Image (cartoon, rainbow, N blue to C red; front, side):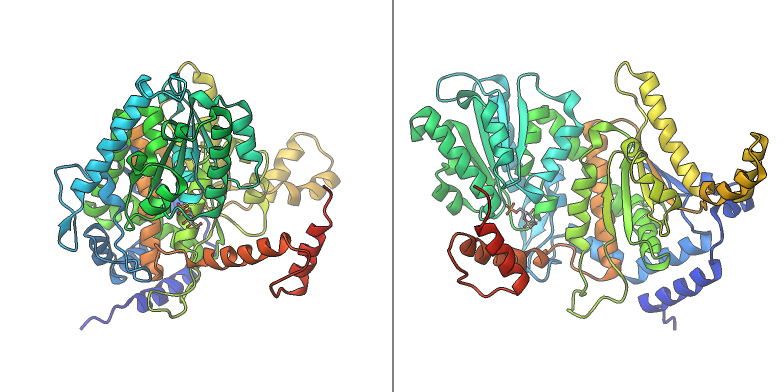
Length: 547
Ligand code: F6P
């Protein structure tokens, strides 16, 4: 009887890694002319070249075994079918239901959730269309021109990133603003130039208890009432997106102007429902439907494609290989398209809040490192900042290069230049350049031998640094939807293999609790709560701050 367990596959992978040693990617390519052609997958408007990873066919076979023995297929079914896989909060995980076609059925405790999803989607659409066509007017009868989304984390990053990415599809009259920071600067900047009669605030908070969001929302509310001179103005200028109707009405927003969602949608997975209201306002219902359709297409691909041709599964397993066998501690996201500039921040929350865990579902410690640091910036800017480290630093960080094939209107030479840089960086990271090759070049250029010897180590590149290249056919709502769902499922697959609960976030609680005590003490003359010496000194220093 076969005794293959995840542990035995981890061991085989470790032995395989030791055998592979520092085998260079150049050698792997030289040994196999079919490598690039075989190590690519295309689905849902996305093309992935993963051949520049330090893997062989045997590595991939073992990684696929790891996915199978970890129960990925069963966990995937459990998620899509509404089982309470978020066990610490006893919740189902059904963000995929938010993008299911209306004709489908998703049962949660025997009840179909799709009609509720569709009902909210239709309310959001109706409201957004009234604002877009100019029928929804402010207290003095003028149509809305500015929309301010007040939210943080999942109630900010998703809509913000998508609205940035899809600016070319934006409604010509509406300007979108996002306020997340509680420091007062961001809300102040927005309010300073806002016209109270034409500004609509969306207070977006799943719990409607998040202090940053409520503080900013109260500031906006006071500003509006101060300008309008009448509390009744709130009804025309404030809407809420939340699961907490009671707190919304306590804030003073009529629940008729509230768009709901459910506890089975995690904050970082929520842009597909009412949290996507700013997106619907910006690109309209048709555009939003296309975003959902793209994500749904990726859901279907994730459920149906065999693991070896499955984009999220492959990307997740390559990530695990890099983290757990090659000791990568971080993962770079490098989009070569300006409109994707908030993608790294969005993926940071998606991945690190999901898998930044060190205990498994059963509460025992994880057996392997999880959750690499996700970081990045548009690739072309990164080239003039952090890429030096990627090429010649002591550790290595695998890179997801993300490019767009269709060019933005009228900018062929710009687009080609950006694309060339992306491809060249992946090539350089992989191939490197030996000290001998560097020395030969310098000699040919006539440098003195002494100088050649001194400079060669500085100018050599080790190469063998892995990357994925992910190409979007075009940057439109549908393809963007597929891209985001791809990363969601990549995170899910990694969580399954590591055995963690990717859907809770207890790690953010302690800081919130302590902030309440510190806040209390900052306002007092002396501490009412016990603190360590460093914290007490910082509080004391704050009390002596310049005014
Ligand atoms: O950072 C913790 C967190 O709970 C995130 O998971 C969430 O996206 C964010 O705060 C905002 O929460 P809410 O939407 O409830 O205001």
